[in-house]
Structure formats: C-alpha cells, structure tokens
Image (cartoon, rainbow, N blue to C red; front, side, top):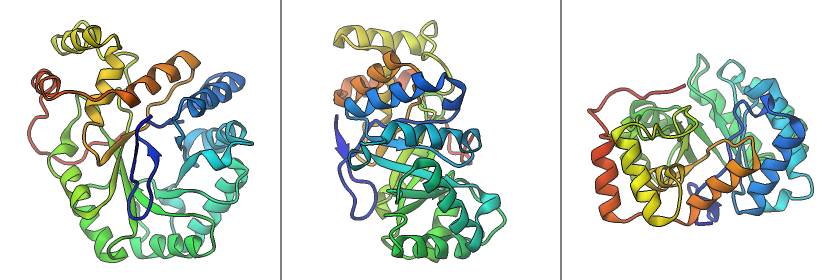
Amino acid sequence: MKTRSFGPGQSGVSVIGQGTWNLELAPRAEAVKTLQRGIDLGMTHIDTAEMYGSGRAEAITGEAIAGRRDRVFVVSKVLPSNASHKGTLAACERSLKQLKTDYLDCYLLHWRGSYPLEETFAAFDELKTAGKIRSWGVSNFDEDDLDEALAVAGKGKIACNQVLYHLRERAIEHAVIPWCEKHGVAVVAYSPYGQMASPALSTPGGKVLAEIADARDSTPRQIALAFLTRKQSVLAIPKASKVAHAEENAGAGEIEISAKEIEQIDKAFPRGRPRSLPML
C-alpha cells in the first residue's frame, strides 16, 4: 500500500483508507472483521466521526483497532453544533471513549457552523498540547473557508481538508486541490464512488473504466480510486462493509495510473466548470 504525507510533519498515511459512514448499519461482527482485514492489507488510515451512527461507528472502529492501535491512523470529527471551545473538548473526550484510545491522530471540524473558527481551533490546539490529538484539520471547506481558516490558524497547522470527490463530482480540482497543494494540506476524498455500488459500467464512462481495468487485470472501482488519488496531495477513504470490498479497495493502493489512462478517464468524466464546493 502506498503511503503519503498528511499535512505538516506527518507521513506514512495509507493513500487508500477506510471510511465508516453508515458502517453501523452492517452486522457488527462483519463490520469489525472488514476493518481489521483492511488494516492487515495496509489500509491503516481509518476515518470516523461522532455523527456516524451517533457514536456507533466510533465504537465499531474502537473494537476493530483493539490491539492494533499502534498500526493505525485514526481520524474523527466534531459536529459544528458541538464546536464551541468547551463543546469541542467534551466531544473529543466522548470520541476517545468510544474508540477506546488515548489519542486521535487527527481531529476535524466536520463542516462550518455558527461557532467562530477561533473557538474551535483554540480547542484543537489545547487538545494537541494535552496529547489528546496529534493533528487537526477541517472538512467540507471551500477555497474561501480555507483562506479564513489559514488566517485564523496560521501556517503549518491545518493537516487536511476532507471533501466530496468522485468521478462525477470533480469540482475540487479547480480551486480546492490547488489551494491545499500550495499550503501543504492533505486532501482526503470521501464517498469516492459517489454513493454507488459500482461506477455505472453501462455508461460510456463506465465502459472506459472497464476497458482499462480489463487490461490491468483489476476492477473498475480500483481504477476509479487510482485516478482520484493520482496526485500526491490526495488520499481516499472508501467505505466497505464486507471483507471482499475491503480487499478490492486495498488493491487500488498499488496501481500507478498512466498518463494515457488519465487522459482517457478525464475525457470520459469531464470535471466541468468551476463552482461552489459540493458536499453530502
């Protein structure tokens, strides 16, 4: 599994990680087994949030990483409604309890809310000083949000920006990815399959993915992930609730997509015109 840097001062994070949104809907034993299989295959970057299943996804993650904590890079998120200074500190403690760990590798503001960024970021800094988190970042931030965040936080503090990114939603390529690359902020792609079980193989674009996959003895989903993570700044966190899906996702972590393949996929799934940041 390829690894990449994750913001200032952090490296060795798996380019393909594991998301946990809605994972609590799967049978718990199977969900735990799937996460553990992913870890064994090198997908050691695990993303969760207090919002996911009202903490149940964090609890599943905690069970999966028991005895493996030193091998994984765990990310969780605070809800905007909890992101006051005091609320952020309390939310982090709840997440740590659910995850049964002493620290988070990264802690994110899930999206912008009514609390000033100054409050949330001050709490993040306090948590980092206390050793409760090792880094912090943001999620669902557009270019103007990132400008404001940088002005508040200062250089070298924002580890990542987690955003919606899949083949039919490439808006972040216009401004968000270039901004993050300029400032050394990792881009983490959530929902990289676009809420679809497979990348619509009946469409012209899907047929392009299938042709490339056949030539490489891989799958269209793996090619889609390889395309999305073609830049050194981008990592992806697909969710899997079955072991077979985790194994398929992990296979994308070794694919080096060619310039010709990039051109083919780019033509099949055009990024469109610049527009505001999409989110789920």
